[in-house]
Amino acid sequence: MSSVQKRGNKFQLRVKHHLLEKPFFHTFDDEAEANNYAKTLDAWLERGVVPIELLEATQGPGPTSPLLLEVMRNYENDPNTRVAPTERPTLTLLASELPGVRMSGITFQRVNQLIEGYKTREKKMAPGTIRKRVGALSKVVAWYHRSTTKEGQQPPVNVVTLLPRGYSQYADGSVRDIARDVRMSADDETAVRAALAGVKRPDKERPWGDDSAFDLLFSLIIDTGLRLREAYRLRVDQLDVARGLLRIEGSKGHHGAAKPRAVPLKRELRAKLVEWCDGRTGLIFPFWDGTPADLATCTSRLSARFRSLFAYAMVPNFTEHDLRHEACCRWMTLKGDRGWIFNEIEICKIMGWTDTKMMLRYASLRGEDLADRLL
Image 1 (cartoon, helix red, strand yellow):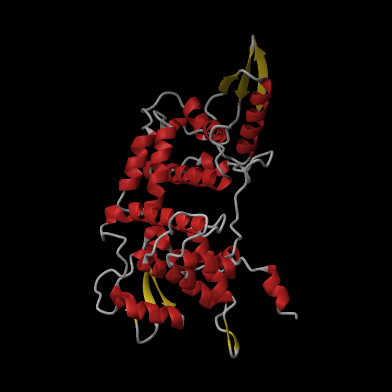
Image 2 (cartoon, helix red, strand yellow; image 1 turned 30 degrees about the horizontal axis):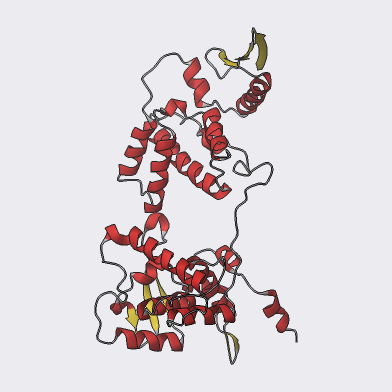
């Protein structure tokens, strides 16, 4: 179906197939690159798949393909498409990385070049970050094909979906996805609470601070597993004193939709919240101004404060989100007179998950704790 011939200092690929209206030609500087692309095209055509670059090259001139940036804007503004708020910044980054590229330019080769660029020494993106960028691009391409394909016709193949398994991994393993597997020991927690209470370290000129609201925020997250944004957006009317629980308006639903859940409160935390909320109305915490515009800034401010707190308490390599991991482990190991208090499904409900695989990701159980049960 395909052949590579040397033409001067270059190499010409010729593809002839019954699925193509006319032969496809392309010139490469490198013979190995030409042969690799030929094998890829042969594999596609054997499966009855015609990549969009072959369709456009063999069907002759047609209407100008729209710019990727234009398609992205239409995709985001489509009332029938729910784009998650967390996806929009990724689309903005993609637009800056592919300036002037038209939809006809989103070929298998171009996507591979994009991925190779992510892996350069200057960028060295984590595999998870690469998958997030490429996944967003794939959604845009799929939407464009659905929107432009005429009734009764087969939509073109989304070349992004043809990427091989493991495309985001580094061949030399120099960059890997980092799985968080840390716990806060009893000594670590004591040091953090001392810093929150204003106890000065001997080697420091001044204490970290004495902020009762931030102290309560720390206790809330580590003892419930609330996400940071869920925690600082809490209102007093979400505290059900009689039932001893918080009614959370979760934000991690499908495409950013609200995902409400009820989170039980341990006795000590319940007492702290009841005392703090006595006489208060509106927001429980004073960190957020209540406007959507301040959400990202507030999250950044509080994340920075947690980093500062953990650094002062000398708790290395610990982040605010690790508190959610710690809370999950505490729910898993919480025992009463009759044994474990909550099962796996119940813990997923508390944490706001619909898939039990998430609990395995967050289960940073200490080996020594497991061994102690055998003594």
